[in-house]
Length: 285
Image (cartoon, rainbow, N blue to C red; front, top):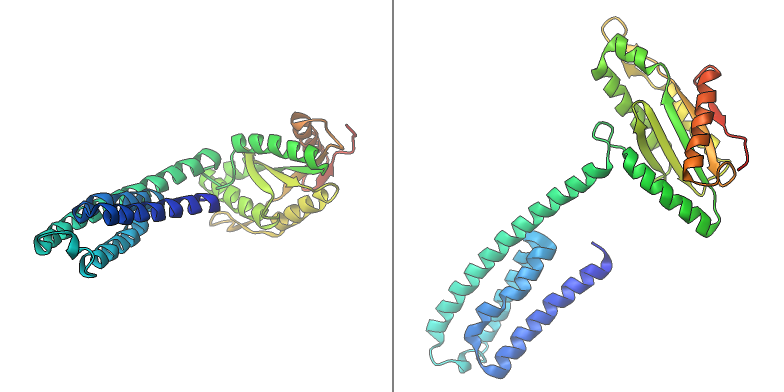
């Protein structure tokens, strides 16, 4: 939740508390408190889940106790004892209702966050998926145009991955994909966008990076080359390599599609030249 949304929610809770207090003060209808105090507790329950409803519920009961025992509340009614029991019962019921609503709200938010995560993440590697990559590529191209900064793109492909799957099985192949995904994430910046482009191919967007994109690709390639991957009983340790293609916007391409094409061409050149190397697109847009 953004800061502005937090401030709006807190303000709504405080205003509703103030409204209840002013209403009781002017009308003398203390018996309406346990109806009205549900407003701030429901706001807190929806916004801050179970903890929010509990905290506001405690604050509401504190205000109620103040009204009732300060002499102000008891002076507004003929039979304070009867009203006290009614208010305790009412506030307890609404507090429980608020806690239930807070619990449900929190659970729904967690489910929604999980669905949102699954919609943009690759389920195997945890990296961003192809759809998210395409959307971010378009956004980063626009950002690059706005601020006149370069945008680097690295396309990565695991060398001889099919042979590995045929030898050690798809389960071990999936483990290699996950391990290499982790290596890629470790070797780039937090602001870089790492995605599983498809199969054994990955893509890395490097905002505000030009010629240094090759250095980033080489860091990843060398880290994979040095890593050890799980094989089988006969060959417990397996070494793998990757090939990389690099292109930079706007030097090598005029748009997002062209940037992917140029990076993919550089990747193809790296694989055709013997694999386990990085090739950079040298063509100007």
